Structures are given as structure tokens and as C-alpha cells.
Length: 315
Image (cartoon, rainbow, N blue to C red; front, side, top):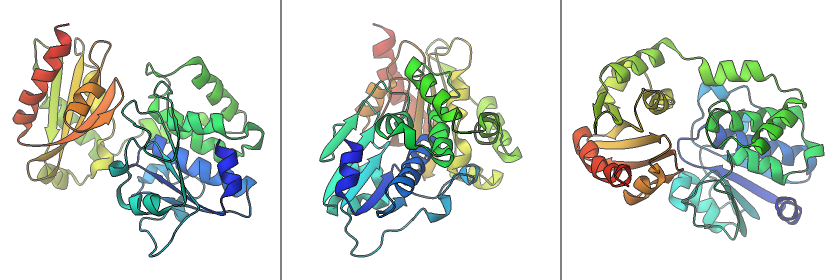
């Protein structure tokens, strides 16, 4: 499917979800480089919001566009790791005006909103899906680094339940292209700044347990983020770390995006499907990792979530 669409298009745009994470960035830049390497007569551009510093080693990162050009119409817009048009953010007009559209994604909440869709909810990552769709004999080291980074982050260094045998085989093949796995894992997944550690420490220290210790929640306000000198990309991993608390089935982390409006991140164990809860509040995601935005105080959010979590815990 992918190579057929690439053959038919002269101009190609690639976009991903707002607040791009490792999988969104890795799949986008990996696909861009694959097209640059193997379809040299094609024009290809990547449209993403600001990218965290830790991904700056990836090939083509300096070419990523953060604004759309006026009047530009692409032959093909490829939407990656994005469950709906709204999540595409500022590049949505390019998608809507493109002559053809393709969505490659692994979110169970994705309804298939492009003209052509490749949605595999059980896949570890969009980066793995991109790797399955491209010609594996034509994967350069730069492409491999980007796709490996994407797989790495959406599997939590291969520890999440979405990691399948196919995921490990894909990662092994990407390593054969010359990827320095230990360096990527250290520099992009485990290494944190002093400020990031301070924020994580605060989130853990001020967290609360509820529902008989089966749920944990914490939050950070805008003014506290300014105090610590961090932005939202520095909050990655806090929800997952909360979830590591013994006895906890669901972890909730809330960061304030404007006064009394919170971006809510959910992580779960084996019982609760947080994608169902996120969809109830207008969001989306996966069974064990999902999110949404809600207005109210942190305690309003917790009260609303408690009712939905209890419905699943009682089954």
C-alpha cells in the first residue's frame, strides 16, 4: 500500500499528533528519510510541533516544519500515530486539502479517517508498522535509528505488553543496520535533567492513593512548572513511574495546560482498560495508556475518574 501511494505522488507531507512523542517523531523522520533515500524525485516535508532536545540526533530533524505554507496542496498527506483529525493539530488543513491521504496508526480509538488507512491496534508502535510497510532491503542506518527510537519509546524499552515477537524481530533487524542501541536508550529514555528529577520527585511525594490503594494520582500546575523551569515534554514518564507503585492498577497524572484545564494521562495494569475511560471523556489511546483533557480542579478530575474506574474494577 505505502510504496504504491508513494509512486503516485510527487509531493508528500508527513504529520503527527500534537505534543509529539518518540514514536510520532521516529516514525515521521524514519519515513521521511526512507522516501529521501529511495524516491529521490519526490518532495517530502514533515510537519510537527516543537521536538524535545533529546531527539535532535535524528537525521532530518532540522528540516521539520512547525508552520504550514500558505496555499500549499500536497499530492499525498501521510498521518502517523494520530487517532483523529483534531489530534493532528496545526497541520490539519494540509491533510484536508491534500489530493490523497493515508493514516498509519496503532490506536484502538482510530476510526480510519483518511482515504486509505492502515490501523493495527495490537501493534507496538506506529514505527513498527512503518517498518513493516517499507522495503526492508532499502533501510539505511538513519532510517533504522529513527524507527528503532520510535519502537523503543512506545514499548518502554520493550517492557510493555504491546511488545510482541514481531516487535523484537523488527528491532533486531534495525540493529543490523548499525543502530547504537545502548546510546539511544540511555540518551533518550533514561537520562533526565536535574529539573526533570525534581518534578518527578515532587509528583511522587505529593501523590495520593485512593480506591483502597488501587489507584494513584498526582498533578502539577502551570505556576509550578514555571518554578522548576520545565515544559510539558519534561513530564514524560511520570505517569508510568506512578503506575510502578506496588498494588496500583491505575495511575493518573495531570498537568495544567491553562487555569483549571488539565491534560490527564492514564496508565493501567491488567484489569482496567483506560482507553475506554479516555474515550468517555473525549480522549483516546490504548488499553494500558490513554489520555484526555478535562476542566476542573485536580480533585474534580479524580472524582470523575473514580466512578469510571470503579465500573471496571467491580467486574
